[in-house]
Amino acid sequence: MSSQTSHVRMHALNILHTILIKQHKAKASIEHVLNQQSWEPRDAGLLREMVYGVLRYYYSLEADVSRFIKTKPDDYTRLALLLGAYQLRYMRIPSHAAVSETVSAIKPYAPQAAGFINAVLRKVSAQEPPAKLKASQAAELPKWMYQIWRDAFGAETVQTMATYYKQTPDLCLAVFKNRETWMQEATAQGFEVRAGELSPFAVLLSPKTHVTQLPGYEAGALMVMDQAAQAATLALNLSTSNHENDAIILDLCAAPGGKTAMLAHRFPTASIVAVELNPRRIPRLQENLTRLSCPHVSLLQADCLALPYAENSVDAIMLDAPCSASGTLRRHPDAKFLHNHEDMLAASALQQLLLKEALRVLKPSGTLVYAVCSIHPAENEAVVANVEGVLNTTRLLPSAEHDGFFYAQIQKPQNKEQP
Image (cartoon, rainbow, N blue to C red; front, top):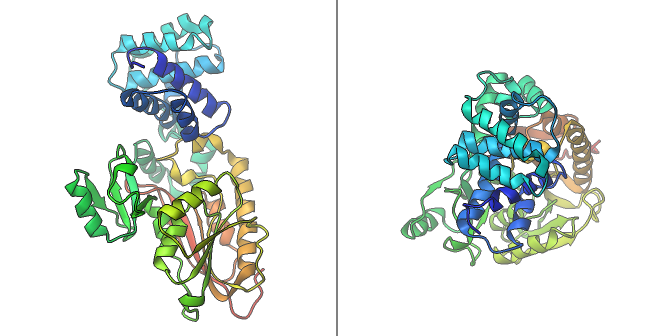
């Protein structure tokens, strides 16, 4: 498959339709297409760049092309215009090639739109981008999300965050052997590495790094894990009244297993239970825990809203709750399209129920970390607002170094039932 043909763009267009119209996740949608046939690495990289590029710059691209449209086009035509505009604005592709190849790519889906797309993209090519954008468009955010963040953090902070999640982030690892030694090994093999600042396990590398080629991968020395998630996991500690040797630690909603593995390396003599409900996520969880050498971890398929544990029976709990993933737009720009305001509120309600159930089984004076990869206040402070025993809360806003994250350290009171 040659990148000189329209095949890459044709597939990119279909993937964008799968994500934005059918509401499927970007990574799975891309991998599904790449697994259907043999792809040259260059073309696979081009496909990913085009899909993720449109997702990252969707709102400004929409403002760009809408200037030249009088009536709303069908979905495939609209997405083809965005795909063409992304190439014209952000890729080193000759304008004539970007236009002609995008026109060819629409033909299997909406052949009648070819002339229209050609005309609009030629106008885009001949004009500068819009001089003025709405604040939400400049931040590449849906209006509802922009307004929540503007009110919570300020307009300037939101625009600063936007500069980070418009860019492809570095690969971040949790390295479970001696970090300095591993970094020396990786450097000797030609990898450019640097230590993360939020975690003693964190190492950052180029986003183009192939993880499986890194030293120690097969031996379980490392796992892909953003350092914000590592910091949240490091916030879980056993109470001074608990002895690690007989402690029970639960990792709730555990897949894909990074936090479980980190807990296992931090508490090598504790009994750690990875609890996961979704049967489709369990094989990968098991595979990761096996590769990462976590023999004292057991895997339990169970509903975290109805844990099979008695009240006051568990020493420590890591609750990485399902959320809107709004903090991960650097890595997952599709998250801003897959969750709306109502989804966020539903996630908040579920998070409160999960936290209540976790606190039920936690021992008095036991410790719990509530964590989400979202920065929406409704999924952050609002969830723990009425919980007794909150020691502190931390919100990490997206930066060049890490995703957005929120976590709260909680110690269950000795003398009161948890509400």
